[in-house]
Length: 409
Image (cartoon, rainbow, N blue to C red; front, side, top):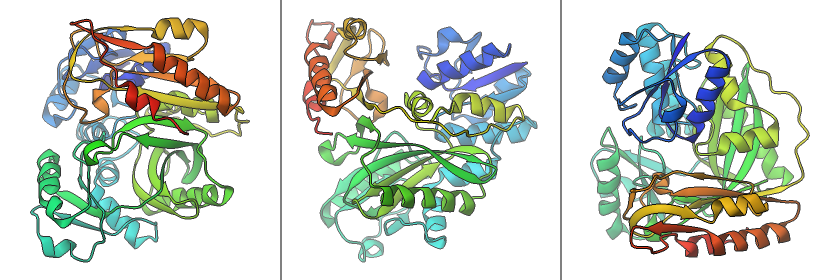
């Protein structure tokens, strides 16, 4: 068999390895020739994974048996659309993939099905009178982007037009959502829907940079700090979402805000969280979502079994840089060997140029710390921040250590 893997990030490495373990030939498509998953694939093709025509032509020319990806948002639509066009197997049909990726459709379905969410307005041209009933602060974001690109918090009416222009420019459809900002802690909820039943696999606290009104994740902590009552609300809401969107067998990611008593859903998608989340989900739930997606695509039905979660605390730190050109990372391997950190990944290669932080795609690396108590977790985190370096071509350390130091979880 031959599979076309769309996107070449860290999760796709695990996907390619899973496919190869089953004797399946792997073709990788990505517009970036230097993606980290490229060395693992049998063949590489420089094709944008958001180019439906380009992906269709490649799949047809190479006579692939199926297309597949994991932990990728907008790519899900392309995978489903091309699979449907070519009559290839896919765990989600195109109509559903489109619906769960469109924030405009999503918010409407939330409102119609009593799924808690903030008040909102969707526009393709800015009209001030349409948002007059909304209370500030507001969040302005594209209807169809990801990685926090184009998302801005505004505190006054005078700032909305500029934020709207940014969001609508980034949107592929030219539309933006303006919604009320909900105060509270952000939780990432990884779910697997098995035969229509939503199983909550992992709850994660998310922390964001918050500079210049942006919302870019720089840290995640597991387990999430939520009460049993809030956890019950989350489970109930996950089932409501699965029912409302007709989801039967699929991974699902929900982003929500909680004030400690209530929840408000920001958005969701029929995928697992990006980056290294697939590894965390497996550790804390025993469920391998990458394997599950391959099984689903090949016509098998994964089962979520009971799992005794380990009593440990985990922090995943996503590392960003000041402006400059990367030459090398230092300190990470030594910290791994000493047991201070339990894992790390380098996302950017030598020669990568950093300017400003615009999204999660600007991360240079990540590291993971685990401990049996929070005091030890904090100690190891401080040690790691003091010793890691991202050396520039000029010999300077580019890492934003100030962002890492903002750790109070």
